[in-house]
Length: 536
Ligand code: GTP
Ligand code: MG
Image 1 (cartoon, rainbow, N blue to C red):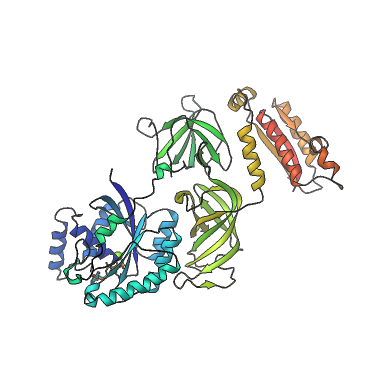
Image 2 (cartoon, rainbow, N blue to C red):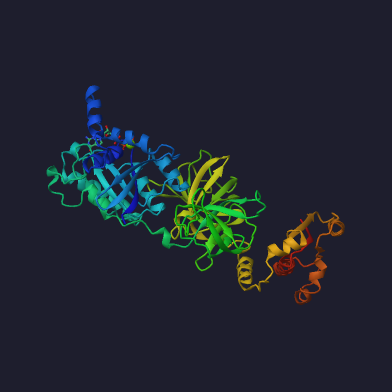
């Protein structure tokens, strides 16, 4: 099968990105019949020179209709593979699209004007490619006609840019001297540049490695929605989401993160077509489960026999900041990762990098607009994330500030949060839990209730216990299976050993809370409504 490669075309304004793509399409037979002739006639009629970039504009309008992304896409059949060009209007838009996932490139063409040489934006783009993990790219030194197809000029620019890229540990596939307007070294070698024996731009496209096979990666489906069907007295729940990586089939044992809930897939459901036998990357799918588990938007589905996403409230990230107001520890944001949305703050700005000079700004806790920074982020609740280097689709996030996209970034390292140890323990406990043959759903039906914890909190002097007792009685009176679990019931029994080594009033330690939670867990598994109390 032919592979498909998405290629971002990046470079400073007017360096010839659109012309290059237009010329490539024209010379390599990638245009609909008559398109070039029509454009030529139109230009002649208006007494304008032929602009290959117009070709692209015409195609864009047709081809990206109905696609709500800022980056125009343009399709091309290269000799050995299908190519999607992503022609971004500017570097901020490019970044925004890359970070939000509106566009994802497997490789890039970086265009530099031979007459202008390496510009600030040329360096920025190199840096962005590196930060986004797009290590595969070719540098096109364009408009060689304007420097007399001069070898020295080409080599000087290539050397300067190569030096810059080396600081980023980036190595392009090749440097191609070209003239997009004249078609030199675009689809065919140029007689004016006989001194150059390397690949043309078209050759370079075939030299890129095929995209990583997302189907072979671990399963990730961020849950978009849960639909309940009651119309025909059937209480099926369909969990809907888009497969970002991996493949899902009926019979797969799956895990939901961050909740850690488990279930087995019963069927796949697709709208308006027969139920598929499997669903892979890019497919939007509905799942039904053998056992009803209560999950909501924001969880990520993985397979039990594959690596699960990390669950954490803290991670180190490279953040691209685009908003006009600074990002810093006191700026409240929302973190959007997968389908989860949680409040988040910057715990610490570790370093701010000037993307064009690669200079590190001193000890600064504010990230200005258009800067890239390594930060530690702390979310209000744990979320499921992946390391970007491992799974880019689920390792990427967006930061929303004041109801607009303020920036975005990629997860570099998952860090411990306050609950990491507890979570690891709970995960093991869930795996080893002796499951009853009576499904939680069957229990829920028999008892006419959903197992739940009611936690009553308030200031120290508030009558929490009294309220708990009253609630227990009232629910009991309504026929509910309810239990008020008092702190004392745990402290003097389950906690007796730690109580001995603890002087002073009350146990507030982590171990106490853990044990209390475990007792709760048993009662919940038994299908009860459990009431407990705690001071704020
Ligand atoms: P933006 O989309 O605005 O960022 O620009 P771009 O990089 O897409 O540049 P575009 O392809 O629109 O080209 C800008 C101008 O440079 C146009 O007038 C082109 O005709 C001209 N140009 C592009 N390639 C060449 C070339 O190889 N030689 C010469 N002489 N001019 C070129
Ligand atoms: Mg353009």
